[in-house]
Length: 239
Ligand code: UDP
Image 1 (cartoon, rainbow, N blue to C red):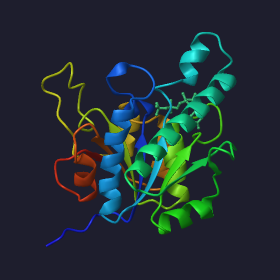
Image 2 (image 1 turned 45 degrees about the horizontal axis):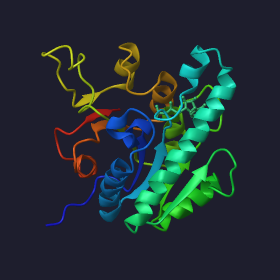
Image 3 (image 1 turned 90 degrees about the vertical axis):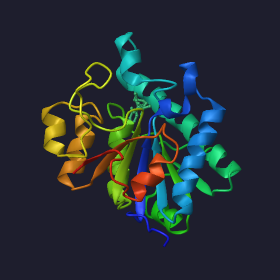
Image 4 (image 1 turned 60 degrees about the vertical axis):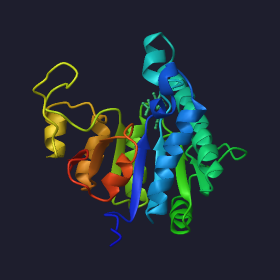
């Protein structure tokens, strides 16, 4: 019997690093392709997919402001970096035959559609993968906050936060052998323990609106499909 996915509409948060590969900076086109294959599998399962992509593989506002750049200017560059990643992802998905739209929070009409909430929803209903670029469009925010905001706006059932680890642990698994992977954890615990999975403003926004987050390892092939199918033991749910 074919299993049905647990979700109708998801918002996938990909950090810029997810497109970077081993090179330490920028974009690895081969990595982008494998990320696109993972996303296609979710789309093929009949789930509506929206994506918020980060920009940390190219530019991070806080790091530049630490080197004495004006924070707001640096953040705008960071947002533009996310637009580049969004177009990379769009290209990779369309090479696989998946229709996509990039919607930007900063108007760049030659490159991307402007973000219009109702239009984004329409694209999703028509089976297009929507990639949200330029974060929230505001400095002093992150793409994690953009993910929470957009997920609420489009009424996504869940945020899937792609990371390089299996989920949320009781301690840093790289340093502590006894670290346990949580199956579930509350927003409050994430905030109180200052677990660095998403910034606090993104977590609070999800908490205030009861939007669940699943933190999972995107590096393991097939994991994202396991998450949408609700396979036990994959990732940690924050709710
Ligand atoms: N950014 C911003 N406002 C937003 C989203 C992003 O100013 O709403 C800037 C910020 O400088 C950030 C950069 O864009 O450092 C890249 O985004 P982020 O660090 O969230 O990317 P990720 O860590 O997910 O790759």
